[in-house]
Image (cartoon, rainbow over all chains, first blue to last red):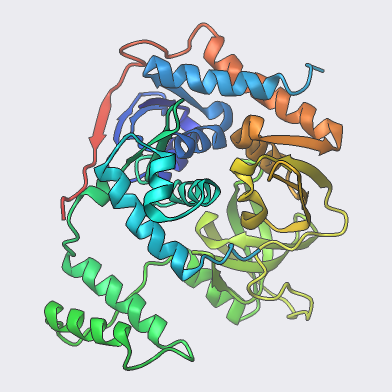
Length: 80
Length: 334
């Protein structure tokens, strides 16, 4: 799975992962991180733990799963 | 907040279940339960536990995964780590030996039992010279310990996971201790004007101030990683059966079983950001009963994260953002 990670979360995200990840750093400090995923629940927990600092870029079905999950969370209460 | 004790028989069954299901993907739960002589409810409990099995640092690729299709057929996917035969490197063998010796030192351990015998064999196979084992430590552990020993007030740069921010503060450190896989230091924090518990690996810098302090008697006792304060807000949650682990993972003030197998729990919350993150992670598996504003907070947080997915510069699609430097790390194959 490919993640887009903000500059201010880059160090914490990469530090949290195993060594078998590929990190592509951008000039602005943000990064694209490719990680293997076997456990969807653990993956979702990891991504959501970083809030808006991390975005699932690919594949589309995993991205859609996270968006669907967030939409369920957002439906829990109306906007203020 | 100790984890649920797992009976030896349960562990033995899971150790037998996992390789069998891996070798027979897509077997129905009914057939698996029948084969292992357990009820469907027991099998569900076992499979829930299997989902928690992984190896450090617990990346999403380091866990076992259990898939169940619409016809209740089960497949277990092994993380790469578990597919490899266990061939210890000298460093891994040494780590296992050190951990085993530490376990043997616990009062009540059998010094001539199976563990001791296995460790003797392992030590023989490693063919070790005389050496000293050094355990990895956070960068500023020594500086914090020294300040605690000499009752020196220090200035630290500290990353707060709960609020996701880096702050600078002066603290009066108490006794440093190790718990739950991390080093902690209880300290009086001049910024908060109260006692706080700090994780040493989240300290990003330490500077001496040259002033000392009187060691007070009120520092939190070692081992108590988070002590809810009376004025910390409380939140009441309904947890579905899938996420009852929350009651074991965090300090709870009350736990009540619900008719559907879930739990109603009351948690003390020192940082709203922590609660928002937890509720995002639990999603539809948890419901805020009280206070209602906590439910609104998490919904707002979810909408904020969703904005990232819907705004114009989202990275979806092949190619992603531009990259300039690449670091590729791989397992060493040991």
